[in-house]
Amino acid sequence: MMLHYVRATWYHWLFCCFCWLTLSACEDTPVEPVYYGNVSGVLRDARTNQPLANVAISTTPATSAVVTDAQGSFLLERVPTGRLAITASKTEYQPATTTITVEENQTAQVAIILTKSQTATAPAAPTRPAPADQANVPGPDVTLEWHPVRPALLSDSLRYDVLLYESNSTVRRQLLTNSRDTTVRATGLQYNTTYFWQVTIRNGSGAATRSNLWSFTTGALPDNRYLFAREVNGNTDIYSSNTTGSMLLRLTTSASVETAPRLSPNRDRIAYASNATGQYQLYTMNRDGSDQRQITQLPVEGYFNFGTGYCWSPDGSQLLYSSYNKLYRINRDGTGLTLIATAPAERHFRECDWTSQGNRIVVQTVGVSVYDSELYYLKPDGTGLTLAIGNLPGRLDSPSFSVDGRRLLYTRDVDGYDDGTGRQLNAHIFSQLLDGSNLVDISAGTGSGASAANSKPLGFNDVLPHYAPDGSKVIFVQVNNVARSVPEVWIVDLNGANRMRLFENATYPDWK
Image (cartoon, rainbow, N blue to C red; front, top):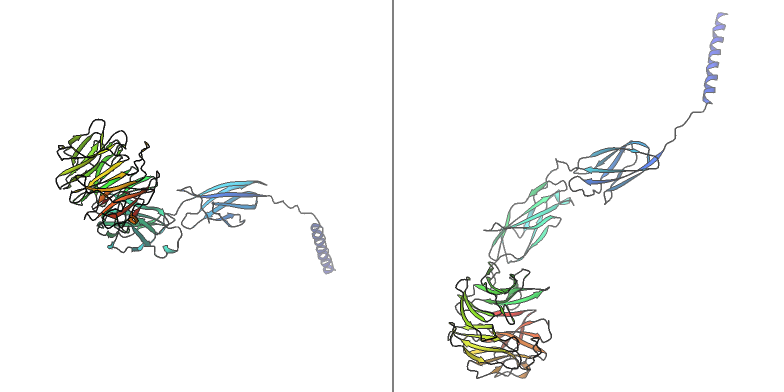
């Protein structure tokens, strides 16, 4: 009886529990809604403030993983509202984490700054220089090349600095700064000079390594026999060259006009005129363009004289030059200025030459019109002023002596043109004995053995002539008679035969 009662009670309790569970399952459970917003951000370098690309972005709580674009930007869409931790990671940088609050239907803005790791490994030093260490190179322009080594070779974040040092000088040249290039051109080097150069390699973290100090030596200065002035992009400079132009050297590089070069008789210094001071003064320099020195203080100027009225003394120790109505000589170092002569009234001295044969000077004088020109002989002490050629129709210019001092070379516009601007229509080169006899029209090709087929072309002028150093030819400028035409340097035989062009875009030639 007691057993049946216990079982009945147990069954009753189980039944009650079942009913309670069934009823509980039928009740509604409330669900909290989820709200979303967006996150927009930008990553920058702490040192340069430049945007950082390819930065990995992760979040806590987890959302989506993205990387920054080329502008350093990223966007996280449909991010649950609430607090969100954003972590940014990039190779060679310290990771950074920032926390923001995301609000419903809003875009949270965040800027994260990354600092480069201080424990970054420095890249290996560059190797395999070209030219090879201690090599000899022709110069004066050299291409320098180097190579990174693995694993730096695989990185696109490498940057290079290159320094060039000249031996026996404290001057250094920064050829490259923070560049990706592994080559650089060193230009305007001195001949017969040893240079040292060094490359600094730097990786993306800023860690740097210097290469060994490499060296090379430039070759000997070429024996260029020709000098001339050339205008390039509005700037006139002095050049030297061999006959073919393959060894062309630019000797001056300033923003001023450098013109009318003349090599000294002993071939060690080049004189030239420059308006660097605002007026044309005489300068000298070495044959490679180094050691440029101002010689005069009184300008080489006057009527139609823009630095062209000067010449060397026969022994190369002095310079003779025109300054308005005065003719001076001065030592090659700028000392010993001496007045030689004063021009006739209302006239200025201009172009001149000086021969050791008979120790004679020829000088041009001009009036207020360039068409009013005369040539005079005189002695180096200023005495013996004698008229050589009087004023003729058209322009009369550029007197110079032959090597033996027996003949006079000059130019004259045979058309006798005079329009007040200084223009010439048909300038010819003439040669004559000092007494005026034995006149030869070189431009017309009328000398013995020549023919009219050798003559100057119509519409051109032959100007600025000088004898070749051996006296066998004349070097001169041929230029169209239209203003601003490009001049060319030519040579011709003494009888007018065998005209040959040497250099384009060149004027005021000298041949020693």
